[in-house]
Every structure is written in C-alpha cells, then in structure tokens.
Image (tube, rainbow, N blue to C red; front, side, top):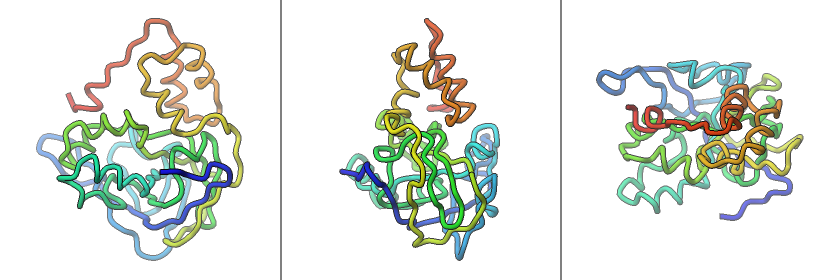
Length: 234
C-alpha cells in the first residue's frame, strides 16, 4: 500500500480503552482486550482517562501514553493469516487509536500531530510480546509484527485535549524526516545494526528514554539481545 509521505494526515476511525483483567491461567492480568469508546475521549499526560494499563513497566506512562495502529495494515494480516481474517479489525491489537492514512511508512520519529484538540508526539514503536500471540491465538504473530515493522507506535502527550471518532490527525511539526517510524522500528529489532547508527539513535532526545537506552546497548560491540521471554513468554 502506498502512503503520502509529504503531508500525511489520517482519519480517526476508532478509539479504544480497557481495564486489566485475568486472561490466561497463571499469567498476569492484561488490558489488551479493549473496547470502543463512546463520545469524546479525554487525552491527558498518561493517555485516555478511561484507559488503565496492567503493567506500567512495559505499557503506559508519559512516553507510552497512547498506542496508535494503522488500520490500513489489516488487509495484510488478513491475507497473511486467512484462517483468522475475520478477527483483524480496528482495535484487535489492543491499540488506543485506529486511523486510515497514517502508518509507519509516512510518519517520522518526533512528529507532532494533532489529535482532536490535543497534540501528541511519536516517540517509539511497539515492542510486541507473547500477549499478542495469546490474544489473537496466532503463534509467532509478535515475531511477524517486528519483522515487518507493522507494530504501531506510541505517543507522548504534548498538550491535553479531547478527540472524537471522525477527527482528522495531521502532522504539525517534523524534526527527523530521514527517520521514518518504519526505519526506526526495523533498526530497533535489527540484530546486526551497526554501532554508529545505534549510537546516533541513542542520542536522539525525541526518542523515548527506554528506546534510547536500548540503542545505547546495541552500540556496544558484541552486545546480543535475547528476545525469547518477550516474544514467546519463556
């Protein structure tokens, strides 16, 4: 699918919130199963006022306040996993915001966008984990997410406000036009990323603190990252 990379904008077609609840025996509670919000949603420093995260060490907080996913990707997932095609629809991945027109290909690290009367800044991609596999009942889905860079992305909140389904999101400011979110996400999960690029990203102030620390580690010669626990839950 082709995206406009010059003046990207998108239409909000879904807003989703949820609360932690037990999902899998012997596993922590999860808020990945979200439901459509009715009426205007209030955007604060920590995201939507009605959205509660189960584990703030991996989700939520100021630099992961809202998760945005491109509904334009759903066709790809339907074709990749046809036996589960009917389940791929806005909100299915636990995202807070679903749009058409915006994706990792045409947004860049640090982009500031309108979100209704609020302003948000793209500051990192999503690190998919085993909960995505369990939620969608597709083994290896999290791995496919990061391999294709179709992970969605997180925002920090620049200005509080409110948003309603049907609102248009527009890029208001762009700071790193050469660092699309797609390129950033692929770099994050590249086991052979060169040290110079990793160091460059570790020094980008608009990048979330967590991802800056991750790139700092990747800039150390010989560093290896074990992703089995995150991707497989082991």
